[in-house]
Amino acid sequence: MPAQIVFLTLYLGLIGGQQPVQVKVGAEVTSVRFLLDGRDMGVLKAAPWTLIVDFGPPYEPHELVAVAYDRDGDETGRVSQLINLPRPAAELTIDLQSDKSGTPVSVSLRYEEVYAAKPVLTTITVDGKPVHVEPGFRAQLPKLDPASPHVISAQMRFSDLALARQEVVITGGAVSDSISTELTPVVITGELRGKSATLERCLSANGVPLQTRAVETPEAQVYLIREPNAREFIAAIDPDHVTGRSWQATLRARKETPLDPGTTLRFTWPIVRRYELPGHISSNIFDTSELLLSKEVGMTGVLTASYNAVAANFPLRPVEPRSQRRFADAVAVAGLRAVSDGRRRAIVLIVDCTFDLGHDRSLAEPLAVRNYLKSVGVPFFVWSVSGPRPDLEPAWGEIEDIGTPRQFQMAVQRLRASLAAQHVAWVAADPLTALHAEADPRCGIATVAKLGR
Image (cartoon, rainbow, N blue to C red):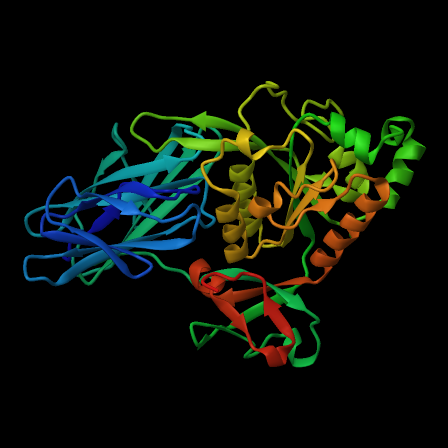
């Protein structure tokens, strides 16, 4: 049986720079080569099978591959994981242990969970039949017929209700992960008409045509990043405190800055909470609001809401006023969430007079974050309620002044137009390949993601 190789290091969030990557291999393995987007990152020839990999600037999308070889230099197995692209909140790997004849006799599980939640229920099945799970997430396997295929499945449920699943298939003496057909959303812009409405022969990646299974115009999602203190936003956008005067006045304010029906909004606050569990990768989590319906709240109401508002539509937790701010990182996290939703999308960063590059403690630079959003296809807007901000433009790009109600209305209309131009094509490709998708100009459409371009 070819030796198995599994990742012990699973990066579920956003990373960059030099990071450790560890794998576990079978006894037959004498070397492991690591590849990042096909580029050689280094070779290991002994335990602990840990390599420092340079992932480059934060938060570029990558595919990390580890390839195992035996003493004759023949490949015996490989594993891969996507970096800086949407992944579940929890993942696990299945590590098989074999006897001298190469027959699997036991299994152990390794997991990561972004909120550092602990497993509360673990199950392992062999060909659909459960086996006893021992402490340390290990299990002894029943005797397996090497001439027949077998499926080993594992599932973990965590205290925060996250669920992780994984399975391996043993067939003909080989071990492999189960693979299913993958559909990935690709955001496009343009007018869909005639042949282009199905995108037949309109999209390709790296010169290879992509099969489009469906084209749709789903509801839009807007991600907002803003200083939690709403005082200056209220002064600029709602100086007469219209939204707090009466429900009739609030309704009029909503109509002044409408988004399309069904559009939802969500804050990602620039306040980080750290989650740590011994033996696992620590996570920095940015708080988010609940989904807010634009037709119920209105852009004016959303941008003038305080972080600790108590209204039913704003179930947000209070924040320490002096908490460290990480605006650029929060924008990047919002971008990752936008990609995972598979909807029409946009991110809006709103700055006030307190916004200063020197007070942003982000790990990533604004330019790196803007490049990341461009590579994954998330339109990005920066609004200022404190007038023109030429001091911020070298880092954050073009900034729209929304310091008056009229300017605010015009900015909202530009946001609405950007969302209205978007459509989503579901293509038969993995997420990294989908980001390389290009459109045939004759189809009258363009892809939003610009990875590598």
